[in-house]
Image (cartoon, rainbow, N blue to C red; front, side, top):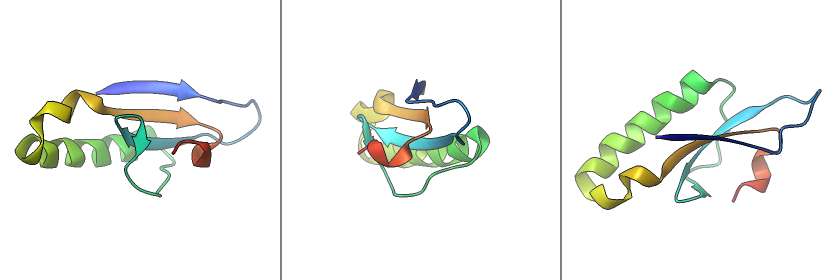
Length: 70
């Protein structure tokens, strides 16, 4: 699982977004990396059964502008 940072702005709160192939998997923004990691692990288990080729495309993105990640 990959971890990226994008658009971090000093003085603004940062959020964590779980993505698959560069796209958000849901509208929820996570406040901590642990929460995002828990959700990404659940996604990994599901994809392992249904789409094993896309397991390496799961990522967690830390950002100050979470809705700019489509």
